[in-house]
Image (cartoon, rainbow, N blue to C red):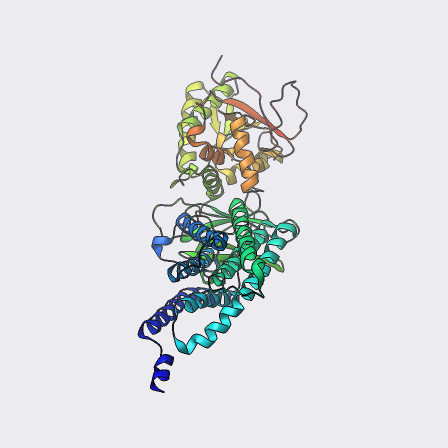
Length: 552
């Protein structure tokens, strides 16, 4: 009797192993569940050292490769040892946690997350425990493991079939793909404790894990290509197209850092909710498209809820923890600055700490002086100068007034207009001035715009716009920018600021600026019309009408 009792008593090593696994599982749940319990505020936050999504994605790729590789080669190798099985099960659990850390609550509801995490702890416990008191449960669970593997395989394949053949929107498609990866990893974790039984057959224990592994790899590859729903890196504008309404709602958030951020949606009258940090109803702004608003965002990972009428969608974000130098987007020049940040993000260029309206660039100054010279040589007696209070506009006004004085041009103000309108303000003031020209409240002798006013909402106003550009919008490089912008940020109009931030050092040496006219009629009078630049002005074109400015 004592001997039998001793055999039933757990060994010290087995008890220690079981305790270690239970403690590990408890820590995992403690790390994961509170973030989900907050509901709308956070996904699973990791240590700040792991805040870089690139590091997390590399870890995810490594863990999934190891788990699927084990499932593919196990039928051809001797039975796996304890260390191997524990390692594979732990890597499967790590892969699921990384998916949740990267994707946040958009991948799974709270209850499903808890169930998956608990199920991932069980295989590790069954592998390492030697506790006799758990032997009965362990034996039954090991016999059930092949069927749990089958259940996970069916669940994963249903999710992936809905993604591949369901005609879903991009966000729904990506969530289904990542959900399939999570369920597949959970099933492969149970594969580590499967025991070969004649009734289950070779196909169940050998073929099924191999097929599931290949499906998981294919789903991860597809999800990586479409790039959602992982949030953008901190400091990079975050974008999503949410399946709301018939056409969906696009949303851009910049600078995507803790604190105040500018949010832009492709439709106005949308409410954006940041949880405890508050919400904002976006509204139209002059000289732009869609809706705009300022919203305060918390540190780290969270979600934005977008409400349009009775419909809503969520967008994962990760603002990081850096609150150092950042562009100022709260003023009227915020939309132009966001356009520049989006352009830089498209090309992978470093984010700018300053906005285009913060200073007057040499190339813009050269273009303005060339346009002033053009008007002086046409013997225009005066111009009506439109400005605002931005540093760029103040510098531009000073340069134009000096050149106009040197060439004998009088400079009037919009309060007492004389001669063609000469606009060196930002988008908002420019929109107001151009609408006044269209209504006949300002002289309709042509509207001469600064080069940074190259954007469709301003060019589509019927005011006879001309602007000096040192690049041709229909050339190959600008058209590459337009194409990438359409693909990544559909609905966002191309702009001069966005193109320059996108082109960076790739932009060829600037030519002498030429005057370009905005036409909303596609039929041009010249035989060679430089290809229709509909990307810059939908329903029209932006076409050179002079030679290089400054040449006689």
